[in-house]
Image 1: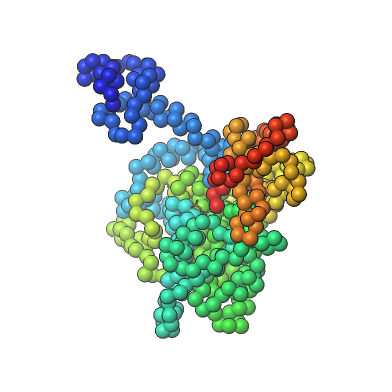
Image 2: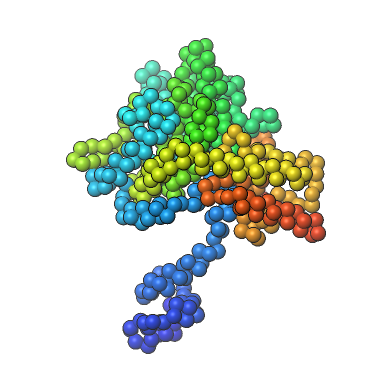
Length: 469
Ligand SMILES: Cc1ncc(COP(=O)(O)O)c(C=O)c1O
């Protein structure tokens, strides 16, 4: 800190200038060095104001329709997060009730996803679906290796079959040395087809990962059809391939919106499921879940025991210390909303997504890619093939940002990378009024582009934005 500011701050003495108005303080009038730890302490209210003002430049999360993550919470969740700020969830012996609540959440989820052993199976909280996916993938790899070792066979070339997965599965494959056999998206094949799974299987396949709510398209993969095909394949060849479902978003939607859809432990081949508590689980950021169908589906040698009320509690995690508040907030939501509450929230989200789809369709410029039926509560569209409306979807996202909306525009992966879509995700905290505000802003943007046609459209890199892919 420059000497002049230091003097002013200390009022020429080493005493702080008490009673100084925050915005006439030296921090605000002359600024402070921001990328080096200051030599002296500053008043908490001044530093708070400084940071709060800087954070205003972040996007407004309620208008962030690019994220799957929860951005609106009951007041009570804020209070519980504050109450739990000092709790380390890994210290099971020191915070036994936090540990007990985590175990209850696992039982609730195992039951919701129809585990035949809901009260005795194993599962855990994680930082999100990425960590949960790594744990699910590791269990598949361990189980496969055990079988191969017992048969005296080579264990050096494991592979995993999936569709258009979120980046966490690419990470899993790279970090844990597994070949990823990814089935590309193709026109007419927007979800993984059973025959494309079967044609990729060999004796080194550790598992198949269908996604319930594909990040790029919001669609559900047909877990039952894949499971049936794997049953037949086992009959024909003797090769038994387990399924892990990446239900990051869908695990909290399908049980309420499409309860008869068989995607979960009702299918015996589904051995584990991951989900993001902080997405449609409605918990604050920082919690995911992985649950195994039965305790025997998680290899013993992946489990570590930690002290718990003088005894031992089995744990499986990549991290050690982690905040407990998100777990408590997750449990609060389960108790507070119940199945009825989750159902109403998910139905409301779906209805907003469907409404936005209909309004977008009426504009006659866009072709709906996903209309909010049958998958996640979202909508997506592309510019009609062959039409040049005088702007790109990147330009439209950029223009909407002026009104605070953050809306993802991105090319589809693999063989469909020539198709650019725009996607909105609807979450708890959104209303019909907000949907109308958005649609009106889209209409206004289109009118603007008519008057001021874009001569050099933005590229994806220039437009920025994040699609959580
Ligand atoms: C299908 C799917 N799997 C995994 C993830 C990663 O989840 P998280 O952000 O909770 O780590 C996402 C995130 O969007 C996703 O959509």
